[in-house]
Figure (cartoon, each protein chain N blue to C red):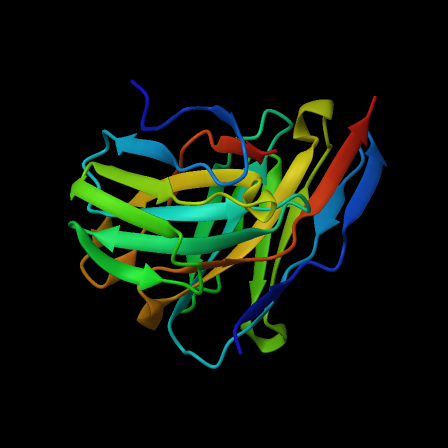
Length: 115
Length: 115
């Protein structure tokens, strides 16, 4: 009965490679997010989608491309990986309630290490 | 500018002590939400509380309590009779109503509760 799941949990790869992280939520939420947590534990939003539409697109290199095939999935594709991309990536989801924002539920995170 | 400051980087207490984690936020918006999340050593992010800007009532949930004061732009979190299982990084976060659900996190406070 996992709420927000991410695969893989760990990803170790070489500089220059292309990789994807998958995220799925079974909560029926209509909004999904990607956050990056750096080595100092600082969390920063990257993207959000609402019903497959891009809502938030922070200042992120265009090597990062989110894709939402349906409202239960939000995948993150990263091209030409760099050392600085090493971080933990969290997916989250939430359900907007009218004109209110509810809490975001986070996945377990994907630890990406670029060598 | 919107910002969340958690001035305490690390706090260490002995079990059964009370501890308060400070959170100060900055925004000019009148409608916003404040959150606390817990990140235990296992790495997941656990939602603790949500407050909207129109609700300044303090809240108590078991050993946890929150004090929201708009006059000082603070949303502090107190753990009463701390336990070793409370050891974690705690994040305060601000969500602006007009920014599509973007969560702005503070730097986090690492709480260590020693037996």
